[in-house]
Image (cartoon, rainbow over all chains, first blue to last red; front, side):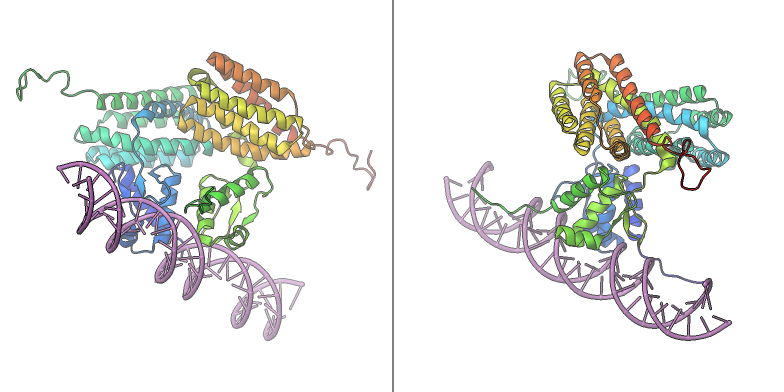
Length: 235
Length: 235
DNA sequence: GGGTGAGTGTTTGTATCCAATTTGTATATT
DNA sequence: AATATACAAATTGGATACAAACACTCACCC
């Protein structure tokens, strides 16, 4: 039993992974400061690997920086949401179609593993695990298509989706719908059968549901119903 | 007349810009080593900004690195060319359609400026300037569409395309075709007119031409015609 | 000739230090 | 009270130093 010390080079990745997870599940809020000196103390490393990790987060669009200013978690920019949803819808269709055309047995195994985690998270009402495994499930579909240009874009879209949907589910007290479990199962079956047209349609439908979720999220709760004629009196 | 010293923070960007240009025009060949210590000496800066620039190139896919190994210029991977062309074709259509739907006057001005540089480069038989201005022209079209998810992917595709097409034109002694100048003019007119269907079709046609160029590049020159019956005697 | 180990040189990853820039706070002025 | 100014503290950008990891060469052995 050898206890080899870790080889050099893993520091930045460890910091990156931890911060990325916090950003994606909204533990680190949009606009939150990512201080080199704080993070250096928190992870017990010098600022050099911290800076490298932050640069990677910036490259991924998860953090934003300006010269001589501290790095912050990237905002969820309302103006870009329609652009996001447009690209998400297209890429759900593209990745699903390609997965149906090109998937291999090991791709299906990866989808099924992620789906099992998704189902377990839904059963446990664990919203964060659900969002992570959902992301991993759809990423596995994209990877099955084998085109890294599409996969990279889709991964960025899934990352942004995780943050947006965290808001959505949090506003519904993390109540998770079981029908998505069935939908994922159906997706796997169609991709396995190589039915590209149906896969693409399913992908598009799935994206439309996300559009609906985000539309519900921004729907007014009280504004149209709350009486404003008398101070402090709700009608 | 004040001679202010440059503010801090521009070092990495300067290195990045210089290396990126060299990578895109194939002055820096695929696989070429990007040594921190060499570059530190070349740019007259410490390794810290060099490392930052290299990390950005890695994030852009233009350089590739492994732990404790030097960074190299990313290979032009033959296996991914069909994936590349698939994504390129789709994204030419998407960006052209969006540009026709959403362009503003300043977008058109930017397209026209890039197109003027393209025409001048073609007239001067300057292949590198032609490839750069072609990239800038098509990027301006993508930016006119206003969706940064599409623009980012398209920019990556245009970068890779610059490297591939550099090979193509170099193998034709940098002979540049005039008809692309007319095609770009036609694209601008259609986008200005807001004709999304025609714009999309033009985008797809343009991509198909690039497919044709790369197919010609890999066509055998001698293999099918050169006699091999007698040593050293060509038939 | 081929394989192995030791020694040397080079490069990379990280820590530490220095200096520029920004931010926060205290004090003075209106 | 509001604003301006001065100063200190904190953070970032970059340089330098140290050590781990790798590449290369040479000597030795089979």
